[in-house]
Image (cartoon, rainbow, N blue to C red):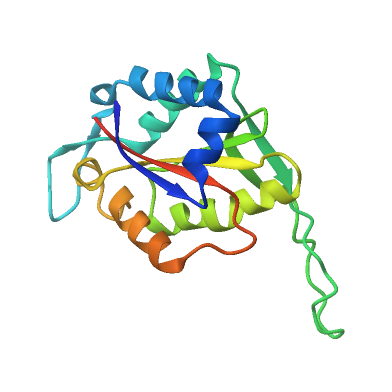
Length: 189
């Protein structure tokens, strides 16, 4: 695969190039090693493209995981302990946090990475919520979000979001004082 789009959210590109050039080099090596053609395994049952072979996000994610693990990148889970004090006194909720967690795909040193081939809301959540949460826990100080460009996403199931849409929204949202530096990488096969 190859990087064809770069967007610097909250000085993400500049921060990562300065603080983590060695890790950015690893990220670029991983992306280059991923052979997307091996992930073209999903037979579409959708009305708009019946019988068409599509790129399978699960296979792509597994391939990224395998490649990142070769460089000793690790995932990180945070157990969710949901507060109970916000319920009205008459309501008796069941225990809510059994097995609940948040997870970041890859972390090394203090750089977090999310690879996203899912719905649009997950991209926004990763950058505008999850990375902030993992920063608040002290696991990361910067992030990289790896997403498909539109041309690539169009060869997956409908509803997969893409780089161009994501960048437009981040540009129009703006940066908040709680946002961390994030480098958004748009990839193609």
